[in-house]
Length: 193
Image 1 (cartoon, rainbow, N blue to C red):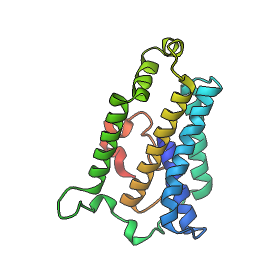
Image 2 (image 1 turned 60 degrees about the vertical axis):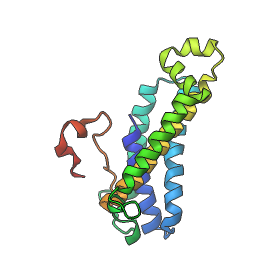
Image 3 (image 1 turned 135 degrees about the vertical axis):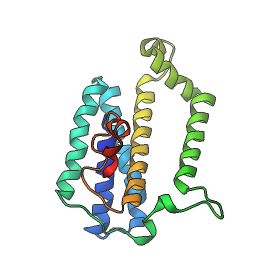
């Protein structure tokens, strides 16, 4: 549930670092990806190692991550991002009409497909989803797998934050508000931010 809030936090923090603290945006990009992964890892630590229910943890971190973004940005938006970063969705692959975000999606989809279908780790992920207790007794490192899955989800939220910042060229604390349960996709009018 906290992926959309993690996205807002990463979008706000990266824009804040660049606009208010003068950090070069080339450095803000890997920092944003790292921050997203750390947000996911925090969720994973609470779920896997403290045994808290993932629904409760992600509900709590939803408020925490969006709150961090709101404390940094307040009711204002940050638009001070470099011109080269604007419109990543409008860049195309060298000499073709294929947009770069589609290429990023294809690469990530291929990596995820290979990871899930051709590695032991992928089998472990499937076994956790099927029966966590049986996976544990089968020798699957349940806690470590959960932590890695949450961390990867956070990394993807960070990547989505950077792509959204590039598309909108603005960072606000309420980025992706309402996307937690897919409301925006069910109601296209929610895509206005």
